[in-house]
Amino acid sequence: MLSARAVAASRNGLRSFFGSGLTSEQFMRKMQNEPILDYKKGSAERVALDAEVKRMAATVHEVPLCIGDKKIKNKLERKQVMPSDHKHVLAKYTHATKEQINEAIEVALIARQKWERVPLKKRAEILLHAADLCGGKYRMQLNASTMLGQGKNIIQAEIDAACELIDFFRFNAKFALDLEHYEPISTEISTNKMMLRGMEGFVAAIAPFNFTAIGGNLASAPALMGNVSLWKPSDTAVLSNYIIYEILEEAGIPSGVLSFLPSDGPVFGDAICASPHLAAVNFTGSVKTFKTIWRNVADNLDNYVTFPKLIGECGGKNFHFVHPSAHLDSVAAGTARSAWEYSGQKCSACSRMYVPASVWPQLKEKIAAIHKDVKLGDVRDGSIFLSAVIDGTSFNRCKSYLEHAKSGKDGAEIVLGGGCDDSKGYFVQPTLITVKDPKSKLMTEEIFGPIITVYVYEDAKVEEMLNSVKDATPFGLTGAVFSQDMKFIEKAREVLRDAVGNLYLNDKSTGSIVGQQPFGGARMSGTNDKAGGPHYGIKWLSCQTEKVTKTPTTGWRYPSME
Ligand SMILES: NC(=O)c1ccc[n+]([C@@H]2O[C@H](COP(=O)([O-])OP(=O)(O)OC[C@H]3O[C@@H](n4cnc5c(N)ncnc54)[C@H](O)[C@@H]3O)[C@@H](O)[C@H]2O)c1
Ligand SMILES: N[C@@H](CCC=O)C(=O)O
Image (cartoon, rainbow, N blue to C red; front, side):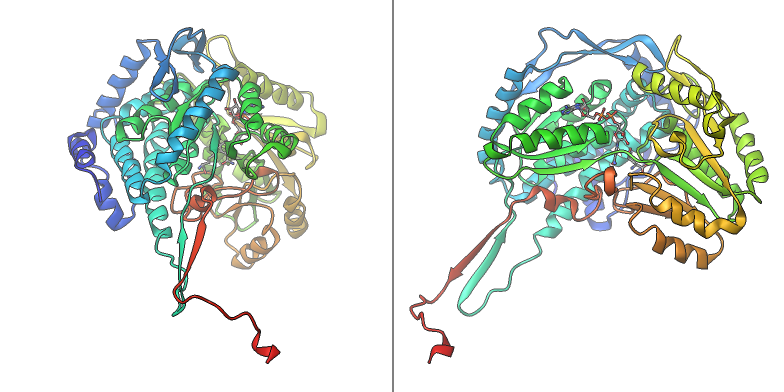
């Protein structure tokens, strides 16, 4: 199954040195997630990561545009900075012009002719090889670039840039190969086949800043199924995404199958939507941007060769619902993690919480005790829990919500944190606010910062409260219910059936794992295609069914006519 090169790469990689993880061969036998390394002080992995962070921070990295065999580096006038030290330039890059995006489309369409005909097994081998490279010699580079560039602490970088990316590559390969097991029924008179054909045209893979692995998945999953992708990374994640692009190249993705195109969002969106060959958009980002893309496609609908598929995973206003019977220590720890880790910049981050009055004083104390110990700071400090938010726009957005809370509107009161400072990095304190109005914008709008708002309800109204949570926002991404009362859990399952794509029971609303909790939300949170699950690959196919008749059919009369 695995090429000799891939086996050699994993044997020579850091991973065997650390003694963690499986090779892809072992994975295909066992289907296990990539183990998360601990990075304890003094451990081999910590020493290696610290050295890589130092090395990466000492250079301004050059990120080119990649179109076919060309790596275009002529201007590089744009800068990716460190969120926790915004004067520190980490990488230089340029934006693709409309003409360059059109050139990438032409190159992709030529590459598609061969790539779509490469057997799935061979394409899967390339991803498995890439997984081994990510787990081995590139693990520290992926993590360091994600820490420095996107403001993740060590463990948040490891679970994203290393483990989730490796899992996406391996599980997607495995799930894709499983699809080949289906064979249509053949009979005495006909032999039937279904070919897992890629789509006619190209895929535009448009990535967010907050998960390195998502960028890699958006571009590579369609490619695995025989498609060609134009990969548009987020401006604030160009370096980590480019490292993945290079890994996929080294793993054997042929030239032209993937183009790497940092670009201005609307310029990229207009160029891909104007092409008659747009076969699909694989988007992850905000609702506003996805709606813009959808409208753009609709405006061009008469010009397409095929109906473009629109796959979008968007924002959320995720909740923790606390029942009076809840285990409060687990609510406190889960809420602090879900709301504040990675500065609340996971689409699944808990951003509103409903708590019964009887337990709020106790729960507040428990969360405050955690808050006291939580450290905010530069990503190069291994002891931090969270770092800066991604950029100035995000900082100002968080600041405006904090100001809203400080004004006391909606009965808002800041209970924990509430400060922010962008003099060195875009730092927003982990914050907890209470409101008297459950319809406050603090309870309904996605903030994407380390800010959680709590509404305290009367215990007697627990069911009424649960019913109101169901439709409290236009989103439908994640939500958690904490209750030791199993009858209430049963009720919550029923009430929240349409309200979330990922439901957590007695656990926090973040932390989905590929192959364990396939991820995605409906309503305004997206098209719910469940990345990390077995059905994701089907989205990228345009299957062809073939019927071969063994005996010539000459009759035309129905039996009923006799
Ligand atoms: N549901 C999920 O699985 C999931 C996962 C991660 C992030 N998200 C969501 O992503 C958002 C955060 O990411 P972000 O700030 O990078 O989102 P964003 O919408 O600002 O940007 C996403 C991407 O779209 C590009 N873009 C902007 N305008 C465009 C246009 N007109 N045409 C084409 N592309 C355009 C951006 O340059 C970027 O690459 C949050 O809302 C978060 O909830 C969702
Ligand atoms: N997989 C992630 C969500 C990705 C969105 O940002 C989680 O569940 O924490």
